[in-house]
Length: 314
Image (cartoon, rainbow, N blue to C red; front, side, top):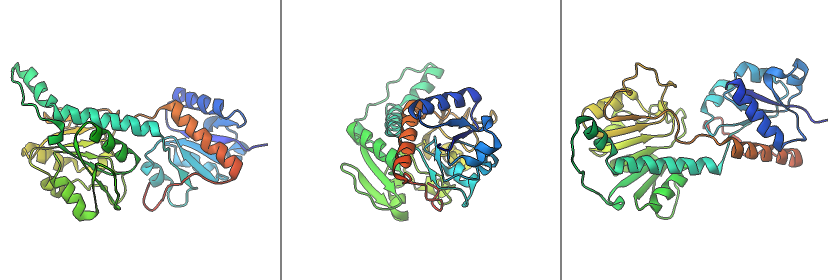
């Protein structure tokens, strides 16, 4: 008899049950159980845990775990909370997530390209002025982070005729995209981009990376889109750069504290567009299928899917 699989989350109970039902339907040969419904014996017997922002104390109760499958693509919180002694962690790698993120990057780049912030201000002030049109090829978009999400976004932008640059920690080569790497390449991309899109993972190296010094390197009048993690940006430095007129606008979908507190200056800043973490929502159906396939393959071969590098954090 196969050991139970634990579903451990801090999401609401209704959503958790919906996830359990989706995965259980795809894995009828398995026993998928919500942590709260498991007996002490079942918790100790569980070999696999499927998690979404789990309580670390609950994971610790699953003393027989061989590995953990995250329902999210971002795992920095999971890695930080479970620590170096945690079982191997598999993050969600979903092509649908890449497609949705690329769609969002294109949408909000077009928002900036077609001067939507200016037209919003004009509407509030009852001003009728037509902003001059620029062809997309005259706008350079720099992508920070050329993983699966960054590459999909870069390709989508390139297909829409934007000039695209990309930066990654290690050298990469991509058709139609000018690629940079390393510290010097980072500053070169910042200084040569009209719109900078942050898609980097949150690690010890990227936390607070976009600060006063980095914003000063960016082109005067450049805009920023952050669809990665809020802690990559130093909030006060970003606001100072916007107030000084060096940066023209920031589209922010992620924040150091979420939901964004009512007292945050981002809510009412005229050069900031606040989004409620909607750039790339997980599709439960495609995600459940990927989790199910990974578990089924493990049962067949005994081999784990690619796991997270704990030292790197992703």
